[in-house]
Image 1: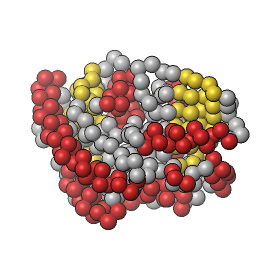
Image 2: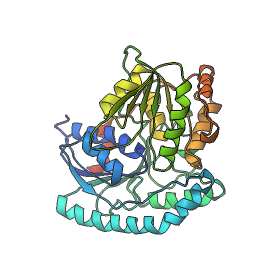
Image 3: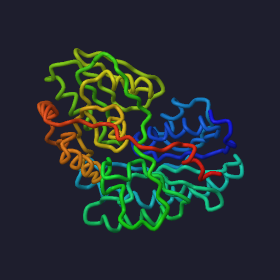
Amino acid sequence: MNLSTPNKTILVAPLNWGLGHATRCIPIIKALLDNNHIPIIASDGVALDLLKKEFPYLKFLELPSYEIEYAKNGKYFKWKLLKNCPKMIEAILEEKRLVKKWIKKHDIEGIISDNRLGVFNKKIPSVFITHQLNVLTGNTTWLTSLLHQNIIKKFTECWVPDSNGTTNLAGELSHLKNPDFNIKYIGPISRMHCKKVAKKYDLMITLSGPEPQRGMLEEKLKAEIVNYNGSILFVKGIIEKEQVKEQIDHVTYYNFMHSRQLEQALNESELILCRSGYTSIMDLSKLNKKAFFIPTPGQFEQEYLAQKLKKEGLVPFVDQEHFTIKDLEKINNFKGLSEIKTDFNWVEIFKVFQ
C-alpha cells in the first residue's frame, strides 16, 4: 500500500455487457486499494454479482440495467440494439441522477466509468475506460464513433487499455489520428498472472456474454466436444450463488470460476477456446496463450478483433454457425498471443483524482 497517497473515495462502475467490463475493472479496483483509495463499486446484473464475489468487503451500489440483449440471428444484432435504445437512454438519465445523489451521500471524490455513459459528474474528476474510440457498426460506423467520442469528451480523461505503439491489441478500435479529447493509454490490463504449472487440461472453454448467444454457443460446443480426444475444462460463464462442478466423461464443467481459480485453470490449459472479446484477448496475451476464437454473431467489434489477430498470424477463428471441433487443428499454424510490455504505474495514472 502507498501510504503517502491521500485516500480518495472513488466510484468504479463497469457496464453489465457480458463479464468483460467487470473483470477488467478487477485489477483497477485492486490498484486503488493498493494506493490507499476507497473504491465503491456500482453496476447491475451479473457484472455486479461477479464483483461482489471478488470483493465481498467493499460497498456496492446498484445502477439501472441497459437491458442489452443479443438477437438470435447475428444479422439482426444492430437492429436489436437500436430497438433497445429508448430503454438505454432512460437508464443513462437515471445513472446521472443517482451519481449526483451518491456523490453527496458517500463523499465520492472521483469516478471511473467503464463504458457506462451516464456515470460522470462535472464537479469531480471523471474517467471513462474504453478500448473502442471507434465503434464499429458496419455502414454506420462513422455515426456510432462520432456519438461515442462526443460522450467521451464530457469526461476528464479517457483511459484506453491498450498500447499506443504499432504493436497493440485493438488496432483501429483504440486509435484515432487526431483526437480532440484527453486520451491516456494505460496498456493492456488483466487480472491474470502467468505461472509455470503442470498441464492439466488439453482444452479449456470459457464462455461469457449476454443471452441468448452465450447459451446457443454452449449447446453447440457440448455437441462438438463429444468428438474431442483430450481432457476439457468447460466454464459456462453463468454467475450463480453457488459454484457447481460436474464431471461428464472427459469434460469437467463449472458454472463459473473466481479470478484465482480461473487464473490457475488457464495456466494449466494447453489451448483456450472462447469469444474474441477484448478482455479475453488481454487476459490471454498476459498468459502467452494459444487460442481459438468464435466471435459473437453480428458483433462487429469481436469480428474485427478476430480478423486482426488472424491476419497477424496469432489466433485463428471461425464463425459460430460453421465451427466444428476439427477447426481447433488450425491453432498449430498460428503463433499464439504474447504479453505486450508497457511502462506505466498506477500512482501516475491516479493523479487525475488529486
